[in-house]
Length: 124
Image (cartoon, rainbow, N blue to C red; front, side, top):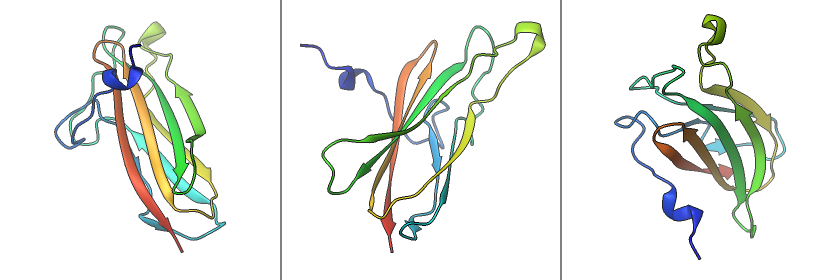
């Protein structure tokens, strides 16, 4: 069997324009609404053209003691120059948790494929 996991690419978002950048506090308060922002190209701009663009993000949270990740958010970016309209690969969402865990983000570039990043968060 072939695994999708073998196709996921990663890297340092400061040196690679395809890696999702996860903006969230390292430590959050249990049960409080927390802001989570995901973007592409914070340090190196990613092209946003019909020919080369980020198509979507998927954001997951895997609780430290959980078996599976929980999907938090899916964003699709569908305007890539039609009528001179371009959307930017950036989203903001909010969620609550009482458990520490890991945020996982996957993104898809129409030319360079699947990319991933993750960030651990603690809860106080």
